[in-house]
Length: 53
Image (cartoon, rainbow, N blue to C red; front, side, top):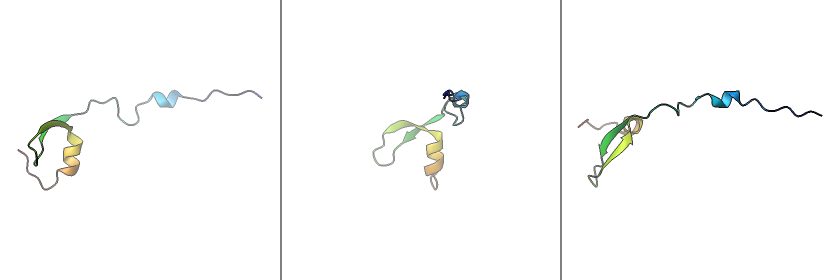
């Protein structure tokens, strides 16, 4: 019985977009006023009802 090597060629593709550069924004926490860099998709997903600035 001959074992075949698995085809890993599909694993080389970036199907999840991990090679893309993540855009960050400066974010100031409301409670402690600490500033931090946060990925912009986090602010978009959880920042509903808040005004920019």
